Length: 90
Image (cartoon, rainbow, N blue to C red):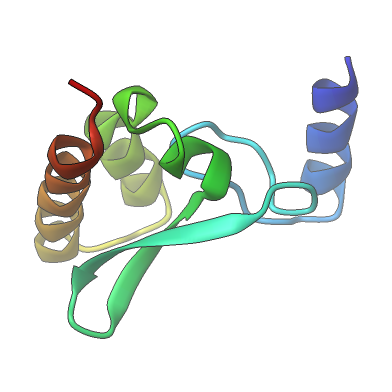
């Protein structure tokens, strides 16, 4: 319930959101994954702390909706996949 209310407030005030979990930045702490030197995509710290829940396809689809170009999206997908591999618990 609290999560829903926080996200509603974020949507009303036009905050952006994490492209992985869709929670709004008004209450989530942002983190980032570098996909190119000096370029990163914002992913909330909660999602980054659970790499197995990162969904590169979902992130790319969410960013595509916002007009990110195809070349950047390919790099982002690879960066997230690499991040998952490097940080997965085995």
